Image (cartoon, rainbow, N blue to C red; front, side, top):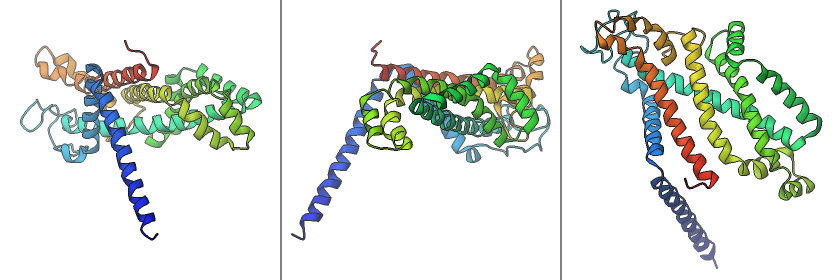
Length: 304
């Protein structure tokens, strides 16, 4: 009698381990079926994440180290030369991956938390709650996002917390629209009505009944929204109101080195220098879209 609970616990633990192995095996099987474009996107994203996480160890110089000469050529300790005040461009590219991607990821998560939460509340409550939130979102969406962001940043400043909150607020309107649209098809289901009739709270219905059934389009939208937020931050930095120096950012690096393009006829390496951060932005955007396209194909049930 005393050994029975231990035997049951051991068997239960073994069953859980096997279930986890089965899930990993199914995931690996699905990954092996992924098209080359999806694999390309996943490899590129993995490389970017690795560089962002280990930026301090990978960068040969400091992020704001300006002890070198201005506009030094490629080589001689500087892979991509130096910028206008003597900072190593290769090191700033590495740190820029951490800063730009980290801020974009935090902004996207906040946008989904705000927009998705209000959308689920509006879809479940309906009535005047839905009307009030939807009309407020319509007002925000009627204003061009970039112009609105420039206005708000000029008022509240260009600090990183302000940048995250402002862009998250503007992008949460798009998240709200999509989440509300897909949630409206779920809230009318019988199991949702049954949960509400037995007295389950709003938060429980949102987490347990609605959210699991609308995850595929939201995950795909997260990837696309991350790309748009990433590009928005780069555009604001290029205009001088985004991430401020000495913090490295790919958008501001394009602006700082744009004058080197006019010297391309004398030194092609100098002309290519401002295109390096621009190419990094474009490559990540393409990679994310490749992965999102594959995920949408899988969740939609389409074969071609």
